[in-house]
Length: 209
Image (cartoon, rainbow, N blue to C red; front, side):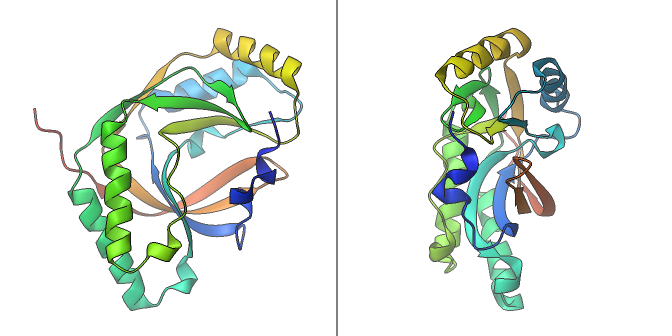
């Protein structure tokens, strides 16, 4: 793996308070407890920073935007657009693979994509129509959560060994996405972690039986 915090998309204008939209597990969902248990079993590795389980998230959309850049009217328009996006999409469930060594991080990839794609598309469309097109960064490549970030290049031999340990200590997880959350994210490159504060949340439409 290569160092995650050398990626161009980590070079934010400010490291504190970037607005992102996340899907977050409910406090009682097993994926949080499982990630904590798996992190303990995985242990400490040079160049690998485990993501704290309480900050586990699935990124729906990163924004090149900060709260203090918006007037009160713009803020209300921004929140209204996100409310409309949430109301247009039904809740769904993601199943995640075992965490995999992938580029600059250890990530667990989610399926199926239909509900996730619908939500991402609704967010981007609603914000674009509300005048926030320039704040939209590229959409995520697919649903996933990050188990750990790479803080120093690890090398192929170590990566192979890391994956073998992951295969032994991790299990496939799942998560119900029944809401979306606006968060203010802080990045800590020296620690290799992201932390965030929740600002707003919106429920998705209940799934029709």
